[in-house]
Length: 506
Image (tube, rainbow, N blue to C red; front, side):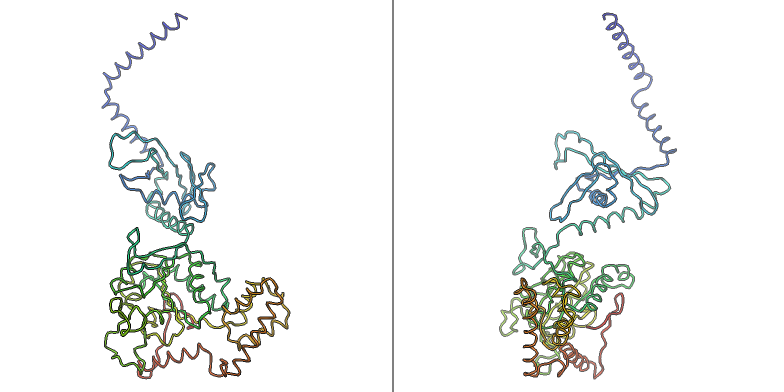
């Protein structure tokens, strides 16, 4: 045993002598230069190149790191052997990502790349203006040198787009409203928000299926038509006007549009807006991929048609829109906006401060609105929310009672078809009748038919059938056409939809 320790001591002495000799012959500067040269030679003959994406760039969070993390949490990460599960704040789903020091293979345009998640311990900091995390995190991207230009030019942009889409799809949508009197919330924003949980969809919407399909196609064309708007020099926005009697589903239509596109909703209360400048500030603080809604615009403020003969106001006189909704005589004079300010809000220079936004106006009396609000570019698509039709009743029977095709007899369906158009009943009234008797389906159908018959008799007695005086939609169109004819010296102006495709005028 003694000989063993003696041999070990001699070996350590030889190693110490060799180390001192190496330091004398090869100083640290020379060794560093040699390693640097070796790395250059290795990279010269290597077919791969590497890119590091750290979590923190200096003192700021690296947005690209978060985007890569979200992108790798998509379906491509299923191929990983070790995954980490997370659920972010305001998220409706669980996402999974790459675990520490694990790697995964991805393919983009037939090019194979390798992502590796590198996690190391950060050195202890003696002093720092901003505390740093204990772990140093980052992604390393390994690609072939021949694919370098392709990856840097388009792959990283593709990752950013996918990450934004995943973030929008996972997070809960919000319903915003402008703060009272223009006050700011704790974040310094003029909007207050609550989670948007409205269950309305186009499947549950009581509306003609053909018209619903046209609206869905128009929304899809808008959301997927960014290149068209850029090529034609138009702002990436679109306006919809929902008009019709109360209870015909205008608010449900807005909710269905938001759920279909997965957009946030900004419910603008004009009575709380004090000036045109405040209206512009509200618009600037809205986000992209959102729906800006002004409901019952004919009731919230005074928007009397300037071309009505009974109006005593001059056409060229600036018209004030008071927030009280009672006109200048009853308004307080402090919270008023002009019609010009509202028009610029929807179709002026300030409306271009953002992208992929939809403006939705609702009204019960379209003929009361100024025609400047109705032209293309402000309200591109006019959607008439009418009384229940036979197809609408079948949708409501399916939603509330679970009736599918063939569950009702042909005689009952035929009777529904004969009376529903003449009854002039709103979807809200039909829904209430079905909810009241939803536990007894036969009774619900029977009482609904009785209600429809009584409405038909009452309408015939009062002479209110649509077949006698024309439909409400046709009457409103005639009122608008007469206004257009008066403006253009008897020539009727044709409203065209020139965004991505031609659409029908509702």
